[in-house]
Amino acid sequence: MIAPHSVTISFLTRSMILLTLASSVLGGWLLCASALLGIGAIALRCLRLPMIPINAFWLGLAASASILEVYHLVRPVDSAIGLSLLVFGIAGLASNRALVGALLGDLRRLDRASIVLLLAILAILAVRSSGPCEHYDTGLYGAATVRWLVSYPALPGLANLHGRFGFNSALFPLVAVLQHGFLAPLTFRIIEGLLVFVAACLIVAPCVRLLHRESNSPSDWFAAVLLIPLTFWILRGDLVGTNTDLPASILSLFAIHYIFRAFNFETALIGATSTTSDLLVAVALLSLAVTFKLSTAVLATIAWGLILYQLRSLHLLSSDNKRVYNRALVIPLLVLTPWIAHGLILSGYPAYPSSVLGIPVDWRVPVESVNLVRAGVRAWARAPFSSLEAATGFHWLCGWFHQARADRQGFALPLLIAALGCFSIVATSRHEQTRFSTARCAPLFPVVIGLGSWFYLAPALRFGEGLLWGL
Image (cartoon, rainbow, N blue to C red):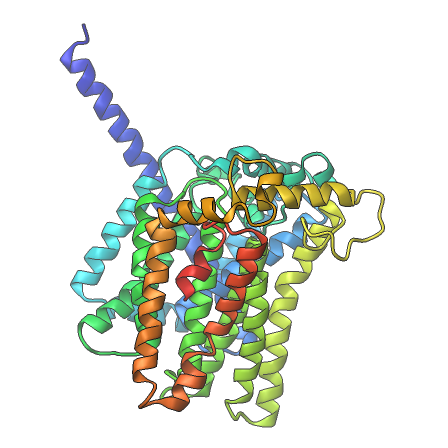
C-alpha cells in the first residue's frame, strides 16, 4: 500500500521539475530572442531599413541560419560559434537604442487583455515545450543529424549512410548550436516554441485592431484567420524535437502576410520605405522557408517574382530602385548559397532528394537510391503504411481524400475559409474591380501554384499546412 504522503511528495517533485524546466525554457527563449533581435538589428542597418522589432527578429533568424551553414562547412557546430552569435547579438541589441525604443513602444501599446492573453500563451508553450518528444522524425533521423552536426564539419556523402541524412534543413544547425553550455538540456525545446510565440504576437495585434474596429485591412483579416492554426500549434503542435514542418509553415504564412500588405498598399500612408521593408523581409522569410523545408520552393519562387514586380510599382528614384532590387537579389543569395553548398557536400545534389543538377563527385548518392528515397516520401505522403506500388497512379486518391477530410484543422477548415473568402471577393468585385484583379488576387497566385505542386509531389497535410492556410 502506498502511503498518502509519498504520493504528495511524488506529485510535488514532478511539479517542481516541470516548473524548473518551464522556467529554463522561458529563459532560453529570452536569451535567443535577444540575440536574434541584435543580429537582426545589424542586418536592418546594413540594408538601411526601418528598425522594426519583428523584422529584426526575422532577419536575425535568417542571418544566424546562414552563418551556421557557412561555419559548418569547415567546422562542427561548436560552442565557439554559439558564443560568438550570442555576444554579437547582445552587443547589437545593446548598441541600438532605436530598436530597443521601438520594442518598448510596441509593449506599451498593448492593452491589458492582449498582455494577459500573450502571457497565458507563453505559459502554455513553456509547459508544453517541457514535455516529452513525440515527434517521429526526430527519432528517425533528426536527433542523429544534430549529433553529426556538433561532432563533425559537413561530411561528404553522409547521405550514403542513411538516406534521410541528406535532408538538408537549415533548422538543424539552429538546433545544434543550442547543444552547448547551460542550454544543452533545452536543445530540442527552444526553436519551435519560440517561433509559435512570435507568431502569436503577430496574430494577436491584428485581432485586437479588428475587435476595436480600428482596421478593416485584408492583411489583418488574414492574420485573424491564422488564429485557428495558431490555437492548434499551441495546444497540439510538436514543439519538442526537430520539427521542420511547423517552422516552415510559420515562415511561409507570414511571408504571404507581408505580401498581402504590400499588394494592398496598406503602408502607403507611411511611405514606400515601409512597403519596401515588408517586401524585403518577405524575401528573407521565403528564402529561409526553402532552407527549412524544400517543399516550399515552388511557393517561394513564384512569390519572389511577384515581389520583384511589386518593387517596380513603387515609383522610387532610379538610384533607390536599383538599390532595392539589388537587396532583393542579394538576400536569397546569402541565405540559399551556403545551404546549397551544404547539400552538395552531404549528397552531391543541391536539392536532395531531387536528382537534378548532381555534381560529378565520388561521394554522390547513386541516382537509383535518390529516386527510391523520393518515391518513399511520395508514397508515405499519398498513402501511409502502403507499398510504393499502391501509391502510384490514381489508386491512392480515395484513401487520401477520406483521411484528409477527417482532419478538420489541416484540411477542412482552411478550404472552407478559402471558399468563403472567394465568395466575399466575388461579391465585392463589382465595386472594386481594379483592386480585385491585382491587389487582392495576385498574392494568391504563388499559393495556388504551390498547392498544385504540393499535391502532385508529396500531398501530406503537414507538408502543405502553410499553403492550405495561405488560401
